[in-house]
Length: 95
Image (cartoon, rainbow, N blue to C red):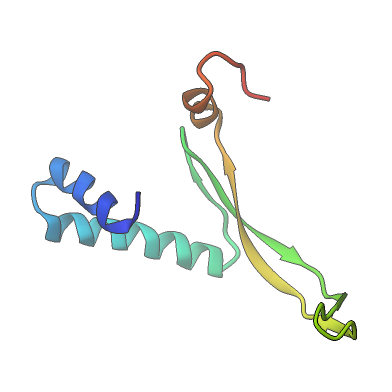
């Protein structure tokens, strides 16, 4: 499912594609802004988005074999919630 498929699904509930697109864009913007400000986002029954800080490290250029510095960066991580784990694996208890 991509973003336009998601908009189509939400449109069946809210009525119009235009409204659904505004809702989806608003949700994504809110999540993006929270993560940008290093604030985690927890959606009960679904999961948690968090910012993970990756430290700078030394790497190797695979083409030349030379050592390069990989800069520190932030990445978004998603941790699925218990309800999502159960939905994906109904016969197994989540860890």
